[in-house]
Length: 589
Image (cartoon, rainbow, N blue to C red; front, side, top):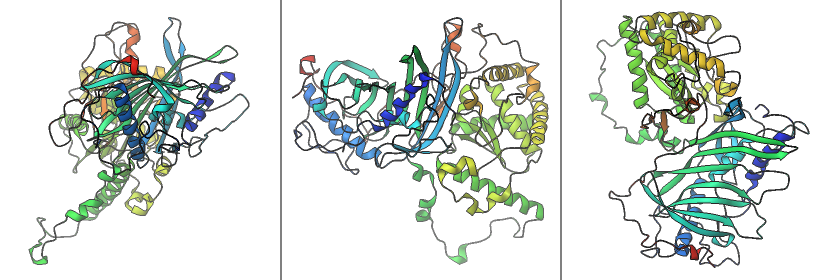
């Protein structure tokens, strides 16, 4: 992982170390001397999703907080048994001449979250600090790294959340998507020296799960700092709410000697149910026929020719690689986005009279960095790249390049046909798997892709694709972590850019034109189900821009998911709350 910066400005980043230690040494159960009324015991991992043995209605804020505490302890018991992937992408910001904050540097973290013994991470990209509780690696007296576990920590409000530690103040009711929520301000009690959550929580009013919390941790240490964050949970199984998104932002965090910290970051979690993506359970569903009833279904039972055998061998390597990526959580299962990309492939094949002689597949890589590559006859495009592409012509440009590798017969390294080559820890995936092409293959694919596009339905819109490349080229120096691929070839480098021929046909890049959208912000197109890893197109409606600043090409924006509740056994229940909690009840005893 690269350094965030130098000088005392970056000393503030040590705050993530403090986040890592936040309330993790406390047990999630009630402590000796705790009033059993205010500190219910943690529910075991097998506790039912619905709260049992409770009154039929919560009439006071005390009742609401009792239930919130119980549900939060149940949440902690559940999350300790789960190991989702956690990804953080961060952009350092600086005001331009017009006073607008623009990215000047970026960082990227990817790992697997492990909260079985506090908060921990296993890194996929080799950052220092992953796998260590305090995560601090001082590389110089004035030089520190952003520490990834500090961002992962923000999925937990307080691992020992107790009513006696906080003051609560009911604010209002508010809808988040379809959910009616109770909005409650939360403050640590005076005199408590333990760092605890300070901010606002949103509690869904049916089972009293915290679905969103927004704030920071307090009190602030003398030499370190806590970031502000907005953390969201989604209802992924009936009665079970799990972390999905965290948005982090600091606009003017003073770090001493007149230095300040200005950045935005997105943290995403997915891969909660990776076991469900495997096929091992299918063995229990196999129906065994009698030997006499089994017959060869092929037209002619015969050995394959050498050409067919070679194709089958490469196909075996392709299937081994894609299945391994799927089980790790790096590749999304087949879904509707694959079909959209397949439609673009068919448009290119049909208009160019190409017969591949075998099936092709399209898949989505789950990560944010912009990359695309082929695994045999499987075209893979990253979620981040799909997010920022402005239109179908730009998508066709990306796919045409990868399709050209297939058409030109560029081979996959068939060492992966030996399955033992895939016996490695998940976190070594980026080091063990490599689908990069040679410079000669890349150049040939570019030329063939231009030929395919000129004969395609996208031939009159290639200027838009060139405009995207111009914007990418312009932002590449400031966003090297976003542009850097982990499995395939780079879209843009310091001296070259893929499909550079299209740059000449593109109009001049004008940042002030509201009708010229060269690229989209991150997260604007693809929606991910964190439980199943299924991806689909976002249903967000287009919005007219009020200013050129709102174009935010390749930039990070806050999360505002549309929250819904999964009904248990059919019809949803009515909300249990019958009266509005009053502010006078904000100091439970």
